[in-house]
Length: 630
Image (cartoon, rainbow, N blue to C red):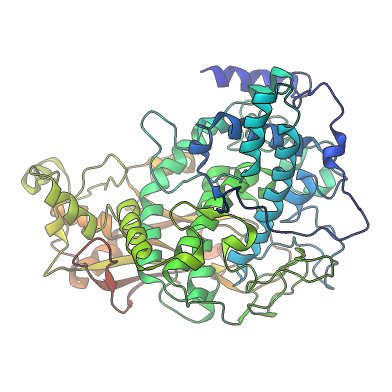
Protein backbone atom coordinates (compact mmCIF):
# COMPACT_ATOMS: atom_id res chain seq x y z
CA UNK A 1 0.00 0.00 0.00
CA UNK A 2 1.09 3.56 -0.67
CA UNK A 3 0.99 4.61 2.98
CA UNK A 4 3.32 1.71 3.93
CA UNK A 5 5.99 3.07 1.59
CA UNK A 6 5.57 6.52 3.12
CA UNK A 7 5.88 5.12 6.64
CA UNK A 8 9.13 3.44 5.68
CA UNK A 9 10.49 6.61 4.09
CA UNK A 10 9.64 8.68 7.14
CA UNK A 11 11.14 6.13 9.52
CA UNK A 12 14.36 6.08 7.52
CA UNK A 13 14.85 9.77 6.78
CA UNK A 14 12.89 11.62 9.47
CA UNK A 15 9.87 13.89 9.17
CA UNK A 16 11.56 17.25 8.99
CA UNK A 17 13.67 16.38 5.96
CA UNK A 18 10.57 15.43 3.98
CA UNK A 19 7.77 17.72 5.01
CA UNK A 20 6.78 20.42 7.45
CA UNK A 21 3.59 22.30 8.01
CA UNK A 22 1.94 24.19 5.17
CA UNK A 23 3.98 27.10 3.75
CA UNK A 24 1.68 30.10 3.29
CA UNK A 25 4.40 32.22 1.71
CA UNK A 26 3.93 34.87 4.40
CA UNK A 27 4.61 35.20 8.11
CA UNK A 28 1.71 33.63 10.04
CA UNK A 29 3.32 33.71 13.49
CA UNK A 30 0.85 36.38 14.63
CA UNK A 31 -1.91 33.73 14.55
CA UNK A 32 -0.32 32.07 17.58
CA UNK A 33 0.22 35.20 19.66
CA UNK A 34 -1.95 36.07 22.64
CA UNK A 35 -3.37 39.57 22.72
CA UNK A 36 -2.41 40.01 26.35
CA UNK A 37 -0.07 37.45 27.90
CA UNK A 38 -0.66 38.89 31.37
CA UNK A 39 -4.33 37.87 31.50
CA UNK A 40 -5.71 34.42 32.19
CA UNK A 41 -6.58 32.16 29.27
CA UNK A 42 -10.37 31.82 29.28
CA UNK A 43 -12.45 29.05 27.75
CA UNK A 44 -15.47 30.73 26.22
CA UNK A 45 -18.45 30.09 23.98
CA UNK A 46 -17.90 30.01 20.24
CA UNK A 47 -20.19 32.17 18.06
CA UNK A 48 -23.51 30.90 16.73
CA UNK A 49 -24.11 30.48 13.00
CA UNK A 50 -25.33 33.49 11.01
CA UNK A 51 -28.90 32.16 11.17
CA UNK A 52 -28.73 31.85 14.96
CA UNK A 53 -28.40 28.07 15.03
CA UNK A 54 -25.82 26.24 17.13
CA UNK A 55 -23.10 24.67 14.95
CA UNK A 56 -22.80 20.88 14.99
CA UNK A 57 -19.70 18.87 15.78
CA UNK A 58 -19.48 16.51 12.79
CA UNK A 59 -18.38 12.92 12.35
CA UNK A 60 -14.90 13.01 10.81
CA UNK A 61 -16.09 11.02 7.79
CA UNK A 62 -18.84 13.58 7.15
CA UNK A 63 -16.42 16.47 7.63
CA UNK A 64 -14.16 14.97 4.98
CA UNK A 65 -16.99 15.28 2.44
CA UNK A 66 -17.00 19.07 2.91
CA UNK A 67 -13.90 20.27 1.04
CA UNK A 68 -13.75 23.73 2.58
CA UNK A 69 -14.29 22.62 6.18
CA UNK A 70 -11.90 19.68 5.77
CA UNK A 71 -9.11 21.83 4.30
CA UNK A 72 -9.46 24.25 7.21
CA UNK A 73 -9.41 21.41 9.74
CA UNK A 74 -6.18 19.93 8.38
CA UNK A 75 -4.50 23.31 7.85
CA UNK A 76 -5.43 24.64 11.28
CA UNK A 77 -4.44 21.43 13.08
CA UNK A 78 -1.12 21.44 11.25
CA UNK A 79 -0.45 25.08 12.18
CA UNK A 80 -1.55 24.37 15.75
CA UNK A 81 0.95 21.52 16.08
CA UNK A 82 3.86 23.64 14.83
CA UNK A 83 3.36 26.48 17.31
CA UNK A 84 6.40 26.64 19.62
CA UNK A 85 6.09 24.36 22.63
CA UNK A 86 6.86 27.24 24.99
CA UNK A 87 3.56 28.90 24.01
CA UNK A 88 0.73 28.10 26.48
CA UNK A 89 -1.69 27.95 23.53
CA UNK A 90 0.43 25.49 21.55
CA UNK A 91 -0.79 21.98 20.82
CA UNK A 92 1.99 20.70 23.07
CA UNK A 93 0.95 22.66 26.13
CA UNK A 94 -2.79 22.16 25.68
CA UNK A 95 -2.24 18.42 25.20
CA UNK A 96 0.08 18.54 28.20
CA UNK A 97 -2.72 19.75 30.49
CA UNK A 98 -3.98 16.17 30.57
CA UNK A 99 -0.77 14.57 31.85
CA UNK A 100 2.94 15.18 31.34
CA UNK A 101 4.95 17.36 31.57
CA UNK A 102 3.31 17.78 35.02
CA UNK A 103 3.77 21.55 34.91
CA UNK A 104 1.65 24.53 35.92
CA UNK A 105 -0.56 25.80 33.10
CA UNK A 106 -2.42 29.12 33.05
CA UNK A 107 -1.10 29.96 36.53
CA UNK A 108 -3.06 27.17 38.25
CA UNK A 109 -0.60 25.78 40.80
CA UNK A 110 -0.52 22.20 42.16
CA UNK A 111 -1.64 21.28 45.64
CA UNK A 112 1.09 19.96 47.90
CA UNK A 113 1.86 16.33 47.14
CA UNK A 114 0.23 16.34 43.71
CA UNK A 115 2.94 17.56 41.34
CA UNK A 116 3.44 14.15 39.69
CA UNK A 117 0.01 14.06 38.06
CA UNK A 118 -1.70 15.93 35.26
CA UNK A 119 -4.85 18.03 35.71
CA UNK A 120 -7.14 15.37 34.21
CA UNK A 121 -9.69 13.70 36.47
CA UNK A 122 -9.86 9.90 36.23
CA UNK A 123 -11.74 7.58 38.59
CA UNK A 124 -13.72 10.69 39.45
CA UNK A 125 -17.28 11.92 39.22
CA UNK A 126 -15.80 14.92 37.38
CA UNK A 127 -14.54 12.77 34.49
CA UNK A 128 -17.33 13.62 31.98
CA UNK A 129 -17.54 17.34 32.64
CA UNK A 130 -13.79 17.98 33.04
CA UNK A 131 -13.25 16.96 29.44
CA UNK A 132 -15.97 19.30 28.16
CA UNK A 133 -14.12 22.61 28.75
CA UNK A 134 -10.88 20.83 27.85
CA UNK A 135 -12.23 19.97 24.40
CA UNK A 136 -13.76 23.45 24.16
CA UNK A 137 -10.30 24.98 24.73
CA UNK A 138 -8.84 22.79 21.97
CA UNK A 139 -11.77 23.67 19.70
CA UNK A 140 -11.42 27.37 20.51
CA UNK A 141 -7.82 27.40 19.30
CA UNK A 142 -8.57 25.51 16.09
CA UNK A 143 -11.53 27.81 15.43
CA UNK A 144 -9.30 30.87 15.73
CA UNK A 145 -6.67 29.41 13.41
CA UNK A 146 -9.25 28.20 10.87
CA UNK A 147 -10.78 31.66 10.63
CA UNK A 148 -7.36 33.25 10.22
CA UNK A 149 -6.38 30.80 7.47
CA UNK A 150 -9.69 31.27 5.63
CA UNK A 151 -8.85 34.95 5.18
CA UNK A 152 -5.57 34.14 3.40
CA UNK A 153 -7.09 32.69 0.23
CA UNK A 154 -6.33 35.24 -2.51
CA UNK A 155 -9.33 34.61 -4.76
CA UNK A 156 -12.34 36.56 -3.38
CA UNK A 157 -14.92 33.90 -4.31
CA UNK A 158 -12.87 31.08 -2.85
CA UNK A 159 -12.02 33.13 0.22
CA UNK A 160 -15.72 33.72 0.89
CA UNK A 161 -16.41 29.97 0.70
CA UNK A 162 -13.65 29.19 3.18
CA UNK A 163 -14.75 31.99 5.48
CA UNK A 164 -18.28 30.64 5.45
CA UNK A 165 -16.96 27.20 6.46
CA UNK A 166 -14.74 28.75 9.14
CA UNK A 167 -17.63 30.64 10.72
CA UNK A 168 -19.27 27.40 11.87
CA UNK A 169 -16.10 25.33 12.33
CA UNK A 170 -16.33 22.74 15.10
CA UNK A 171 -14.00 19.84 15.89
CA UNK A 172 -15.00 16.41 14.56
CA UNK A 173 -15.46 13.16 16.44
CA UNK A 174 -14.65 9.66 15.30
CA UNK A 175 -17.57 7.29 15.82
CA UNK A 176 -15.78 4.14 16.94
CA UNK A 177 -19.09 2.58 18.06
CA UNK A 178 -20.48 1.59 14.65
CA UNK A 179 -19.24 -0.10 11.49
CA UNK A 180 -17.39 2.07 8.99
CA UNK A 181 -19.15 2.70 5.68
CA UNK A 182 -18.72 -0.01 3.05
CA UNK A 183 -15.19 -0.07 1.68
CA UNK A 184 -13.68 2.08 4.45
CA UNK A 185 -11.36 1.09 7.28
CA UNK A 186 -12.59 1.13 10.87
CA UNK A 187 -9.88 3.56 11.95
CA UNK A 188 -10.39 6.29 9.32
CA UNK A 189 -7.79 6.27 6.55
CA UNK A 190 -7.27 9.99 7.08
CA UNK A 191 -5.12 9.01 10.09
CA UNK A 192 -2.96 6.43 8.31
CA UNK A 193 -0.52 8.27 6.06
CA UNK A 194 2.37 10.32 7.51
CA UNK A 195 2.46 12.59 4.47
CA UNK A 196 -0.45 14.11 2.56
CA UNK A 197 -1.05 16.40 -0.38
CA UNK A 198 -2.91 19.43 0.94
CA UNK A 199 -4.52 22.40 -0.80
CA UNK A 200 -4.34 25.83 0.82
CA UNK A 201 -3.99 29.56 0.13
CA UNK A 202 -0.58 28.95 -1.48
CA UNK A 203 -1.60 26.02 -3.69
CA UNK A 204 -1.13 22.27 -3.27
CA UNK A 205 1.76 21.16 -1.06
CA UNK A 206 3.05 17.94 0.49
CA UNK A 207 2.87 18.32 4.27
CA UNK A 208 3.15 16.13 7.33
CA UNK A 209 -0.28 14.70 8.17
CA UNK A 210 -1.33 16.25 11.50
CA UNK A 211 -3.73 13.33 12.12
CA UNK A 212 -1.00 10.71 11.80
CA UNK A 213 1.02 11.88 14.77
CA UNK A 214 2.32 14.81 16.76
CA UNK A 215 6.03 15.55 16.27
CA UNK A 216 7.75 16.87 19.40
CA UNK A 217 9.84 19.98 18.73
CA UNK A 218 11.94 19.67 20.68
CA UNK A 219 11.72 16.21 22.17
CA UNK A 220 12.27 16.44 25.93
CA UNK A 221 13.23 12.97 27.11
CA UNK A 222 12.97 13.91 30.79
CA UNK A 223 9.45 15.34 30.48
CA UNK A 224 8.06 12.27 28.70
CA UNK A 225 9.54 9.99 31.40
CA UNK A 226 8.94 6.41 30.16
CA UNK A 227 11.51 4.48 28.18
CA UNK A 228 11.57 3.79 25.23
CA UNK A 229 8.56 5.93 24.39
CA UNK A 230 10.31 9.09 25.56
CA UNK A 231 12.98 8.56 22.89
CA UNK A 232 10.53 8.69 19.98
CA UNK A 233 10.24 12.05 18.28
CA UNK A 234 6.55 11.56 17.44
CA UNK A 235 3.47 9.80 18.80
CA UNK A 236 2.92 6.17 17.81
CA UNK A 237 0.10 3.66 17.42
CA UNK A 238 1.18 0.03 17.61
CA UNK A 239 4.85 0.97 17.05
CA UNK A 240 6.67 -1.59 14.91
CA UNK A 241 9.60 -2.31 17.22
CA UNK A 242 10.81 -5.03 14.87
CA UNK A 243 11.46 -2.40 12.21
CA UNK A 244 13.17 0.06 14.54
CA UNK A 245 13.41 0.52 18.29
CA UNK A 246 14.44 4.18 18.06
CA UNK A 247 12.00 5.33 15.36
CA UNK A 248 9.34 2.63 14.93
CA UNK A 249 6.61 3.42 12.40
CA UNK A 250 3.00 3.22 13.52
CA UNK A 251 1.02 0.18 12.39
CA UNK A 252 -2.38 1.77 11.94
CA UNK A 253 -3.68 -1.33 10.20
CA UNK A 254 -3.10 -3.29 13.41
CA UNK A 255 -4.85 -0.60 15.45
CA UNK A 256 -7.80 -0.66 13.05
CA UNK A 257 -8.08 -4.46 13.15
CA UNK A 258 -7.90 -4.58 16.94
CA UNK A 259 -10.52 -1.85 17.30
CA UNK A 260 -12.83 -3.58 14.83
CA UNK A 261 -12.48 -6.85 16.75
CA UNK A 262 -13.65 -5.02 19.89
CA UNK A 263 -16.70 -3.49 18.22
CA UNK A 264 -19.26 -6.17 19.23
CA UNK A 265 -18.23 -5.85 22.89
CA UNK A 266 -18.30 -2.06 22.76
CA UNK A 267 -21.79 -2.07 21.28
CA UNK A 268 -23.05 -4.52 23.89
CA UNK A 269 -21.50 -2.48 26.70
CA UNK A 270 -22.98 0.76 25.37
CA UNK A 271 -26.39 -0.88 25.03
CA UNK A 272 -26.20 -1.96 28.67
CA UNK A 273 -25.05 1.50 29.75
CA UNK A 274 -27.85 3.36 27.98
CA UNK A 275 -30.61 0.91 28.88
CA UNK A 276 -29.70 0.08 32.49
CA UNK A 277 -27.73 2.97 34.02
CA UNK A 278 -29.75 5.99 35.13
CA UNK A 279 -27.69 7.26 38.08
CA UNK A 280 -25.08 9.87 37.16
CA UNK A 281 -22.31 8.70 39.49
CA UNK A 282 -22.63 5.11 38.29
CA UNK A 283 -22.65 6.22 34.67
CA UNK A 284 -19.84 8.75 34.97
CA UNK A 285 -16.80 6.93 36.28
CA UNK A 286 -15.12 3.60 36.92
CA UNK A 287 -14.51 4.05 40.66
CA UNK A 288 -18.05 4.67 41.95
CA UNK A 289 -19.39 1.10 41.74
CA UNK A 290 -16.50 -0.43 43.67
CA UNK A 291 -16.58 2.36 46.26
CA UNK A 292 -20.28 1.67 46.89
CA UNK A 293 -20.02 -2.13 46.66
CA UNK A 294 -22.45 -2.18 43.74
CA UNK A 295 -23.01 -5.16 41.46
CA UNK A 296 -23.47 -2.97 38.36
CA UNK A 297 -19.94 -1.98 37.38
CA UNK A 298 -20.18 -0.39 33.94
CA UNK A 299 -19.40 3.29 33.23
CA UNK A 300 -18.73 5.62 30.33
CA UNK A 301 -15.19 6.07 31.63
CA UNK A 302 -14.51 2.33 31.55
CA UNK A 303 -15.88 2.03 28.00
CA UNK A 304 -13.80 5.04 26.95
CA UNK A 305 -10.74 3.25 28.38
CA UNK A 306 -11.13 0.48 25.80
CA UNK A 307 -10.35 2.83 22.91
CA UNK A 308 -7.25 4.17 24.64
CA UNK A 309 -5.73 0.75 25.28
CA UNK A 310 -6.80 -0.94 22.04
CA UNK A 311 -5.86 1.94 19.71
CA UNK A 312 -2.43 2.47 21.24
CA UNK A 313 -0.84 -0.95 21.61
CA UNK A 314 2.58 -0.06 22.99
CA UNK A 315 2.13 3.52 21.81
CA UNK A 316 1.13 6.81 23.41
CA UNK A 317 -2.65 6.30 23.66
CA UNK A 318 -2.11 3.46 26.15
CA UNK A 319 -0.20 5.69 28.59
CA UNK A 320 -2.59 7.93 30.55
CA UNK A 321 -0.17 10.89 30.91
CA UNK A 322 1.00 10.69 27.25
CA UNK A 323 -2.23 9.85 25.44
CA UNK A 324 -3.37 13.40 24.70
CA UNK A 325 -0.39 14.05 22.42
CA UNK A 326 -1.82 11.61 19.86
CA UNK A 327 -4.24 13.55 17.60
CA UNK A 328 -6.57 10.54 17.86
CA UNK A 329 -7.14 11.47 21.52
CA UNK A 330 -9.29 14.50 20.65
CA UNK A 331 -11.33 12.61 18.04
CA UNK A 332 -11.95 9.90 20.63
CA UNK A 333 -12.87 12.29 23.42
CA UNK A 334 -15.24 14.25 21.19
CA UNK A 335 -17.02 10.93 20.56
CA UNK A 336 -17.05 10.22 24.29
CA UNK A 337 -18.55 13.66 24.91
CA UNK A 338 -21.21 12.88 22.28
CA UNK A 339 -22.16 9.70 24.15
CA UNK A 340 -22.26 11.64 27.41
CA UNK A 341 -24.52 14.25 25.81
CA UNK A 342 -26.84 11.49 24.55
CA UNK A 343 -27.06 9.95 28.01
CA UNK A 344 -27.67 13.34 29.63
CA UNK A 345 -30.72 14.19 27.55
CA UNK A 346 -32.17 10.72 28.20
CA UNK A 347 -31.61 11.15 31.95
CA UNK A 348 -32.12 14.90 32.41
CA UNK A 349 -32.57 14.90 36.19
CA UNK A 350 -29.59 12.66 36.98
CA UNK A 351 -26.64 14.67 38.23
CA UNK A 352 -23.45 14.70 40.24
CA UNK A 353 -23.57 13.44 43.83
CA UNK A 354 -20.59 13.99 46.17
CA UNK A 355 -17.82 11.42 45.74
CA UNK A 356 -14.24 10.98 46.93
CA UNK A 357 -11.65 11.38 44.19
CA UNK A 358 -10.22 7.97 43.30
CA UNK A 359 -6.93 9.33 41.95
CA UNK A 360 -4.73 12.34 42.61
CA UNK A 361 -4.61 15.08 39.98
CA UNK A 362 -2.40 18.17 39.78
CA UNK A 363 -4.86 20.12 41.93
CA UNK A 364 -6.87 17.48 43.84
CA UNK A 365 -5.55 14.84 46.23
CA UNK A 366 -7.07 11.36 46.20
CA UNK A 367 -9.87 11.05 48.74
CA UNK A 368 -10.96 14.69 48.37
CA UNK A 369 -14.76 14.98 48.19
CA UNK A 370 -15.76 16.33 44.78
CA UNK A 371 -19.16 17.83 43.93
CA UNK A 372 -20.90 19.53 41.03
CA UNK A 373 -19.37 22.85 42.15
CA UNK A 374 -15.77 21.60 42.34
CA UNK A 375 -13.59 23.74 40.03
CA UNK A 376 -12.65 22.02 36.77
CA UNK A 377 -9.06 23.20 36.90
CA UNK A 378 -7.23 24.70 35.05
CA UNK A 379 -10.12 26.02 32.92
CA UNK A 380 -11.20 29.59 33.66
CA UNK A 381 -14.68 30.68 32.64
CA UNK A 382 -13.81 34.38 33.05
CA UNK A 383 -10.76 36.60 33.53
CA UNK A 384 -11.76 37.23 37.15
CA UNK A 385 -10.57 33.72 38.06
CA UNK A 386 -13.90 31.87 38.08
CA UNK A 387 -13.40 28.26 37.03
CA UNK A 388 -15.77 26.13 35.03
CA UNK A 389 -17.62 23.57 37.16
CA UNK A 390 -19.76 20.55 36.33
CA UNK A 391 -22.84 22.71 36.97
CA UNK A 392 -21.78 25.40 34.51
CA UNK A 393 -20.56 22.82 31.93
CA UNK A 394 -23.71 20.71 32.04
CA UNK A 395 -24.90 21.40 28.45
CA UNK A 396 -22.98 21.47 25.19
CA UNK A 397 -24.72 24.62 23.99
CA UNK A 398 -23.01 26.49 26.83
CA UNK A 399 -19.83 26.17 24.77
CA UNK A 400 -21.52 26.80 21.42
CA UNK A 401 -21.84 23.33 19.90
CA UNK A 402 -24.29 20.42 19.67
CA UNK A 403 -24.34 16.90 18.23
CA UNK A 404 -26.61 15.92 15.36
CA UNK A 405 -28.64 13.27 17.19
CA UNK A 406 -29.06 15.34 20.35
CA UNK A 407 -29.29 19.03 19.50
CA UNK A 408 -29.61 21.60 22.25
CA UNK A 409 -30.27 19.97 25.61
CA UNK A 410 -32.86 22.62 26.47
CA UNK A 411 -34.95 21.76 23.39
CA UNK A 412 -34.91 17.98 23.79
CA UNK A 413 -38.49 16.69 24.07
CA UNK A 414 -40.41 13.40 24.13
CA UNK A 415 -40.37 13.08 20.35
CA UNK A 416 -36.61 13.63 20.39
CA UNK A 417 -36.24 11.04 23.14
CA UNK A 418 -38.11 8.35 21.25
CA UNK A 419 -36.11 9.04 18.09
CA UNK A 420 -32.81 8.81 19.96
CA UNK A 421 -33.77 5.62 21.81
CA UNK A 422 -34.74 4.04 18.49
CA UNK A 423 -31.31 4.92 17.07
CA UNK A 424 -29.47 3.56 20.11
CA UNK A 425 -31.43 0.31 19.90
CA UNK A 426 -30.46 0.02 16.23
CA UNK A 427 -26.81 1.03 16.73
CA UNK A 428 -25.98 -1.01 19.81
CA UNK A 429 -28.76 -3.53 20.45
CA UNK A 430 -28.37 -5.63 17.31
CA UNK A 431 -26.79 -8.64 19.03
CA UNK A 432 -29.12 -8.54 22.04
CA UNK A 433 -32.20 -10.80 22.14
CA UNK A 434 -34.24 -7.67 21.43
CA UNK A 435 -32.22 -6.95 18.30
CA UNK A 436 -32.18 -10.57 17.17
CA UNK A 437 -35.96 -10.77 17.52
CA UNK A 438 -36.31 -7.70 15.33
CA UNK A 439 -34.00 -9.24 12.71
CA UNK A 440 -35.94 -12.50 12.77
CA UNK A 441 -39.21 -10.67 12.15
CA UNK A 442 -37.68 -8.85 9.19
CA UNK A 443 -36.27 -11.95 7.54
CA UNK A 444 -38.17 -14.90 6.09
CA UNK A 445 -35.05 -17.03 6.23
CA UNK A 446 -33.54 -17.60 9.65
CA UNK A 447 -29.84 -16.78 9.86
CA UNK A 448 -29.49 -18.77 13.06
CA UNK A 449 -27.23 -21.79 13.39
CA UNK A 450 -28.75 -25.20 12.83
CA UNK A 451 -28.45 -27.09 16.08
CA UNK A 452 -28.26 -30.43 14.26
CA UNK A 453 -25.57 -29.23 11.84
CA UNK A 454 -23.58 -27.59 14.60
CA UNK A 455 -23.57 -30.64 16.84
CA UNK A 456 -22.13 -32.70 14.00
CA UNK A 457 -19.48 -30.11 13.23
CA UNK A 458 -18.39 -29.06 16.69
CA UNK A 459 -16.66 -30.83 19.53
CA UNK A 460 -17.49 -30.46 23.19
CA UNK A 461 -14.70 -27.86 23.34
CA UNK A 462 -16.54 -25.49 21.03
CA UNK A 463 -14.77 -22.22 20.32
CA UNK A 464 -17.28 -19.36 20.16
CA UNK A 465 -17.04 -16.89 17.30
CA UNK A 466 -18.54 -13.53 18.27
CA UNK A 467 -16.78 -11.48 15.63
CA UNK A 468 -18.88 -9.22 13.41
CA UNK A 469 -19.19 -11.77 10.62
CA UNK A 470 -20.19 -14.62 12.92
CA UNK A 471 -23.67 -16.03 12.53
CA UNK A 472 -26.25 -14.87 15.04
CA UNK A 473 -27.90 -17.45 17.29
CA UNK A 474 -31.61 -18.16 17.12
CA UNK A 475 -33.55 -15.72 19.22
CA UNK A 476 -35.42 -18.58 20.90
CA UNK A 477 -32.09 -19.57 22.43
CA UNK A 478 -32.66 -16.93 25.08
CA UNK A 479 -36.23 -15.61 25.14
CA UNK A 480 -39.00 -16.92 27.36
CA UNK A 481 -42.26 -14.95 27.37
CA UNK A 482 -40.42 -11.81 26.25
CA UNK A 483 -37.75 -12.11 28.94
CA UNK A 484 -34.17 -13.31 29.04
CA UNK A 485 -31.17 -13.40 31.38
CA UNK A 486 -28.32 -10.98 30.76
CA UNK A 487 -24.95 -12.34 31.94
CA UNK A 488 -22.00 -10.07 32.72
CA UNK A 489 -18.43 -10.54 33.94
CA UNK A 490 -17.51 -7.78 36.41
CA UNK A 491 -13.85 -6.91 36.92
CA UNK A 492 -12.56 -4.90 39.90
CA UNK A 493 -8.92 -4.04 40.52
CA UNK A 494 -6.76 -1.57 42.43
CA UNK A 495 -6.16 1.62 40.45
CA UNK A 496 -2.41 1.05 40.77
CA UNK A 497 -2.54 -2.74 40.45
CA UNK A 498 0.29 -2.81 37.92
CA UNK A 499 2.71 -0.20 36.66
CA UNK A 500 0.38 1.20 34.02
CA UNK A 501 -2.48 0.00 31.83
CA UNK A 502 -3.26 -3.67 31.26
CA UNK A 503 -6.03 -5.92 29.94
CA UNK A 504 -8.01 -8.79 31.45
CA UNK A 505 -8.80 -11.25 28.64
CA UNK A 506 -11.44 -13.99 28.82
CA UNK A 507 -11.25 -17.30 26.98
CA UNK A 508 -13.26 -20.48 26.81
CA UNK A 509 -10.65 -22.93 28.03
CA UNK A 510 -7.02 -21.95 27.50
CA UNK A 511 -5.57 -19.01 25.60
CA UNK A 512 -3.89 -19.92 22.33
CA UNK A 513 -0.95 -18.16 20.69
CA UNK A 514 0.58 -15.02 22.13
CA UNK A 515 -1.10 -11.82 23.27
CA UNK A 516 -0.64 -10.03 19.95
CA UNK A 517 -3.23 -12.29 18.28
CA UNK A 518 -5.72 -12.63 21.10
CA UNK A 519 -8.17 -9.98 19.89
CA UNK A 520 -8.92 -12.09 16.80
CA UNK A 521 -8.57 -15.54 18.39
CA UNK A 522 -11.83 -17.55 17.99
CA UNK A 523 -11.33 -18.91 21.50
CA UNK A 524 -11.34 -15.32 22.84
CA UNK A 525 -14.68 -14.18 24.27
CA UNK A 526 -13.62 -10.62 25.03
CA UNK A 527 -11.56 -8.43 27.32
CA UNK A 528 -11.71 -5.62 29.85
CA UNK A 529 -8.93 -3.06 29.26
CA UNK A 530 -7.84 -1.22 32.43
CA UNK A 531 -6.53 2.27 31.58
CA UNK A 532 -4.64 3.50 34.63
CA UNK A 533 -1.70 5.65 35.71
CA UNK A 534 1.73 4.31 36.53
CA UNK A 535 2.29 3.73 40.23
CA UNK A 536 3.03 7.17 41.60
CA UNK A 537 0.31 8.27 44.04
CA UNK A 538 -0.23 5.30 46.35
CA UNK A 539 -3.97 5.28 45.72
CA UNK A 540 -5.78 2.18 46.94
CA UNK A 541 -9.04 3.01 45.17
CA UNK A 542 -10.64 0.29 43.06
CA UNK A 543 -11.84 0.70 39.49
CA UNK A 544 -14.16 -1.55 37.51
CA UNK A 545 -15.21 -2.61 34.04
CA UNK A 546 -17.45 -5.26 32.51
CA UNK A 547 -17.68 -7.82 29.73
CA UNK A 548 -21.13 -8.88 28.44
CA UNK A 549 -21.36 -12.66 28.09
CA UNK A 550 -24.93 -13.13 26.83
CA UNK A 551 -24.19 -13.20 23.09
CA UNK A 552 -21.56 -15.90 23.53
CA UNK A 553 -23.84 -17.91 25.83
CA UNK A 554 -26.69 -17.68 23.29
CA UNK A 555 -24.41 -19.17 20.64
CA UNK A 556 -23.53 -21.96 23.04
CA UNK A 557 -27.23 -22.67 23.55
CA UNK A 558 -27.71 -22.72 19.77
CA UNK A 559 -25.07 -25.41 19.30
CA UNK A 560 -26.15 -27.49 22.28
CA UNK A 561 -23.24 -26.77 24.63
CA UNK A 562 -25.71 -25.55 27.26
CA UNK A 563 -29.47 -25.96 27.18
CA UNK A 564 -30.54 -22.49 28.38
CA UNK A 565 -29.40 -19.23 29.94
CA UNK A 566 -30.61 -20.28 33.38
CA UNK A 567 -28.18 -20.14 36.28
CA UNK A 568 -28.39 -23.93 36.66
CA UNK A 569 -26.80 -24.26 33.22
CA UNK A 570 -24.58 -21.20 33.00
CA UNK A 571 -22.88 -21.12 36.41
CA UNK A 572 -21.27 -24.60 36.30
CA UNK A 573 -20.32 -24.08 32.65
CA UNK A 574 -18.53 -20.78 33.35
CA UNK A 575 -16.91 -22.15 36.51
CA UNK A 576 -15.36 -24.95 34.47
CA UNK A 577 -14.62 -23.25 31.16
CA UNK A 578 -14.17 -19.48 31.58
CA UNK A 579 -10.50 -18.50 31.88
CA UNK A 580 -9.28 -14.97 32.71
CA UNK A 581 -5.75 -14.00 31.61
CA UNK A 582 -3.98 -10.68 32.32
CA UNK A 583 -1.68 -9.07 29.76
CA UNK A 584 0.29 -5.92 30.59
CA UNK A 585 1.00 -3.14 28.09
CA UNK A 586 4.33 -4.76 27.19
CA UNK A 587 2.26 -7.80 26.09
CA UNK A 588 3.60 -9.96 28.92
CA UNK A 589 1.26 -12.33 30.73
CA UNK A 590 0.94 -11.56 34.45
CA UNK A 591 -0.17 -14.22 36.97
CA UNK A 592 -3.57 -13.30 38.39
CA UNK A 593 -2.29 -13.40 41.96
CA UNK A 594 0.22 -10.64 41.12
CA UNK A 595 -2.51 -8.19 40.06
CA UNK A 596 -3.29 -6.22 43.21
CA UNK A 597 -6.93 -6.24 44.24
CA UNK A 598 -8.13 -8.23 41.23
CA UNK A 599 -11.66 -9.57 41.68
CA UNK A 600 -13.77 -11.15 38.93
CA UNK A 601 -17.43 -11.94 39.53
CA UNK A 602 -20.27 -13.11 37.32
CA UNK A 603 -23.73 -11.59 37.68
CA UNK A 604 -27.05 -11.92 35.88
CA UNK A 605 -30.18 -9.83 35.47
CA UNK A 606 -33.64 -10.67 34.17
CA UNK A 607 -34.41 -8.36 31.24
CA UNK A 608 -37.82 -7.68 29.68
CA UNK A 609 -37.95 -6.74 26.00
CA UNK A 610 -40.11 -3.67 25.24
CA UNK A 611 -43.13 -3.71 22.95
CA UNK A 612 -41.59 -1.29 20.45
CA UNK A 613 -38.15 0.00 19.50
CA UNK A 614 -38.69 3.48 20.89
CA UNK A 615 -38.19 2.09 24.40
CA UNK A 616 -35.28 0.37 26.10
CA UNK A 617 -35.50 -3.09 27.65
CA UNK A 618 -36.39 -3.11 31.36
CA UNK A 619 -33.71 -4.52 33.64
CA UNK A 620 -34.37 -6.37 36.86
CA UNK A 621 -32.09 -6.49 39.88
CA UNK A 622 -28.51 -7.66 39.33
CA UNK A 623 -27.84 -10.99 41.06
CA UNK A 624 -24.38 -12.22 41.97
CA UNK A 625 -23.84 -15.73 40.61
CA UNK A 626 -20.18 -16.70 40.79
CA UNK A 627 -16.81 -15.62 42.22
CA UNK A 628 -14.45 -16.40 39.35
CA UNK A 629 -11.34 -14.90 40.98
CA UNK A 630 -10.57 -13.00 44.15
